[in-house]
Image (cartoon, rainbow over all chains, first blue to last red; front, side, top):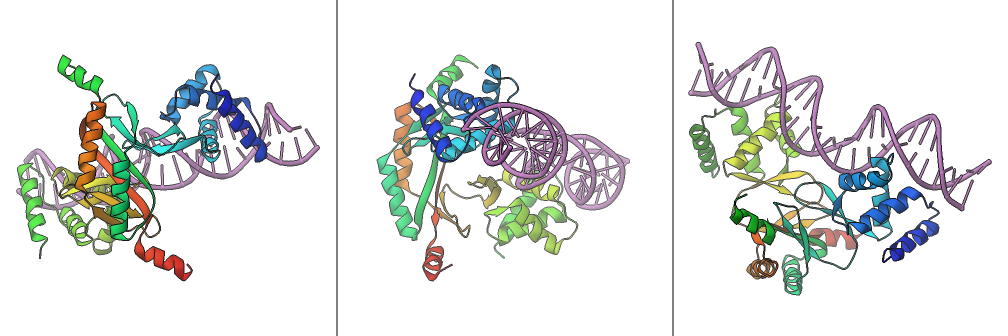
Length: 148
Length: 148
DNA sequence: ATAGATGCAAATGTTTTGCAGGAAA
DNA sequence: TTTCCTGCAAAACATTTGCATCTAT
């Protein structure tokens, strides 16, 4: 499967850092990749638990932190204050549906360069940014018209 | 003082909604306007407390919620997860210095219209957005060179 | 007099930490 | 067999709520 690559990356990270390769860590990474990220700690916990009862919240949170350090995941904080983990990949921003929770990624070079201009204007040195658009996705707009 | 206007707005909001005009509410609004917003609940609590010992966190939080309803304040959530209250005014976004915590507002029409394009492309209906640039402000960059 | 406000303490919800037992190397 | 992990329970932290008391109207 396509996830072998990431499992190998995890293994080599663990090895390089004198950490142990446990079934819990493997299981959490597995589920995380399966759902393609954008998942909360709670949700991840529930899903891993389905296959591995007995696993604790603690392990999920600790493992996700580890995956972030390993460069396989990254944390995202949207409006609801709940941390979500996504698969680490090149820079992008998000569209979030406030009705169904769907998250879509986008990337816009024009905005990036406008940001650079703003930063220059104020004399800041830019480290990172966060840009989120909240609204209703096409499916939910259709549902609205339907009557829900 | 310039704050009379807002105190009047508060009074009329309270009246319209059958709420009472208390010294706590007045004091909190006073301090909030004084510091020009972008303040945390904790910070606001400490400052109000300096002049009005005995006031509780609860009242600060409840009053800020009320001021938001009244359209005088609005909540902002930056990266650190602590709610900050700002003076409500026309749409804008923020530059945040991650060293000293300074917050600068900006507004960019080019970005706004680029957003509209993106939203259209994905078929979303845009309700609101959040755009924050994190970096080092000019003062902190100077300090860095200095040696701190 | 009475609806509404206050302040305390306790609850909340998410994430983290201390610790004793358990598993990988 | 030593080092690192795990899971539980408890802590942490910002914010909210229950409740008895107090206050503006």
